[in-house]
Image (cartoon, rainbow, N blue to C red; front, side, top):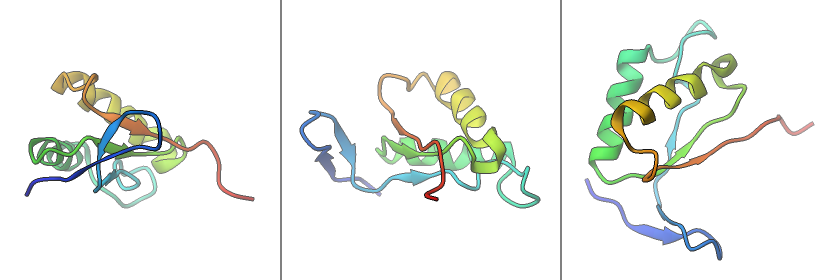
Length: 91
């Protein structure tokens, strides 16, 4: 698999058109991906050329963002990954 890239608005950032959604990274909701499985998905996404990762502070009660921080640090991909996040549900 390879990714096409798209410029994000006028930011100049080139992001993969397919984002990696991480709502199920972590098991604190009683379901979802354990750390090993989530890391495998993250690594495969990066290896395929993806760079646009979506999360939120409330996904799996913050576990998603904690895991992503570990994965990005361990993979040395901080300067390559564009991390998007949300801070609230629409009320």
